[in-house]
Length: 170
Image (cartoon, rainbow, N blue to C red; front, side, top):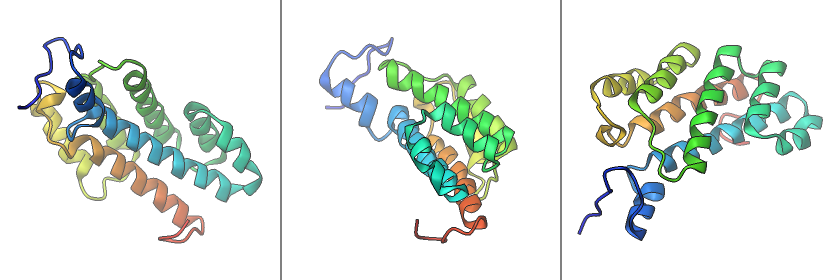
């Protein structure tokens, strides 16, 4: 029997808890996995810029890692702003188990990302199209949130390769 999420997003059962954090349509797992991927690539870029900064980068929280990345030029100011918005969303999801982002909140991040990152596969543009028609996060197709992170990681990976990194191996 499929789980029913209570109307105000209270978690009333173990099934609700599982679906909230690990179900196939979970905004929480999509954002946290994307956030971890971004952090990994930012640390690779910092280390590539100066290997002596690796231990510092490993100790920084996400916001400070983004700031360092902006300061050394591995991400632009507009990219850094989007990465900080993503971090704010991740923090809400990580610290408020029942938090559900609004469509307006997601649309704002996607709009900013469209201006800051290269939309190689049109995922951001297609995501914006989906967001325009959605009334709630639950209305979104499974691919919408992960696609934002795919586009961001494409740019970070491209920066890594442009700076001499291997296309496939780290």
